[in-house]
Image: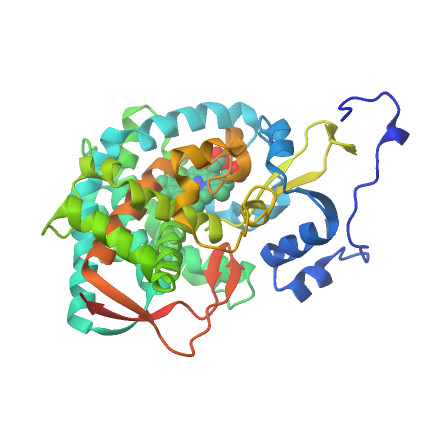
Length: 435
Ligand code: HEM
């Protein structure tokens, strides 16, 4: 297909639903149950490239992985979508800072966050926190709200990672982060917002990080690593906040969706257990070095994130005109990556609703285009926490599947909704009993 044309009239009009000013397609989005389900319907009806309007914003959504490749160098994020988090930042909203500042920030963050030594250094504490939760479940033996419990656990892991075990393990620290994030998400998604409580929690979080910086504890956590690199204290506080915010619900919902799928696919659960029993023997948790030999675990985690991506979409803003297939998308347009719709695109995922971890054998994965599976986004704004998240998720899932049987509570309906992450509306409730 022609990629470059001289005359704009040769381009086709991008299909999509008719917008109603001034709210664009907000009513259609609400009727679909949210942006995540709206995007599924949008692409089913209009094909892989479709447009819609948010108030004051023209959006083009691209659900074809081959076409996405042409966008993989775009760095800019649209301001409006992340505006609600701006008050959290002292030195500029890290989710939307310009490329000049973002590129060196990302490089340094990745050097601290993305390296295996830092994951390994925290793995003992991650294991202790996960086993604590498992012990509580074993003592409780009954119905559990997985999403709530596992989000709380993943909050504890990421706070420990960011602040070090001494400060990070204090209940007061994770409560301050939890309340702060709950206030901001609540405001965005229509619950009550207490400005005074949010301000108090933000002040507490900032004071705590400043305390770590002043004490200069070597090797404690991400905050200390960044201080050693000579970062400005305001940027460090902002970075710790964005890391905790990004790592709080995401890893926890990934594990709860995986357990939901496993509970409905006992043959997959059994195969996973067989692998865990074989590699771990009687031990309740894998050692860090063993994670790489748990092949089937990795496939299960990936397939669960395909079916229920914790981050259901990502966005960019076009710095210049983009020609995509037969379409010309003008500069300034918001480009959406509808991650859920991409992961369910039947052209690349036959029977997309079927849960089948063997889609992720090396041979199968090689047959697909690179961007058919993008739970962590892609390009210069992709998730810096991807490798760490995989470590956390595999650890949590290995410990829980090894130790417990999970049976869905009869009559309890699990409905995916978007609440910053792909969330289950009334949680995922299961009866959990030791094997
Ligand atoms: C299952 C777990 C997680 C998932 C599915 C996930 C997914 C995502 C997605 C989809 C994005 C947007 C990417 C894009 O625009 O292309 C993102 C951004 C980000 N994530 Fe994650 N994430 C997870 C866990 C984490 C963790 C544990 C951390 C921190 C340790 C983290 C830190 C970040 C940061 C800092 C960004 C902003 C990237 C930037 O603007 O440069 N994430 N994540």
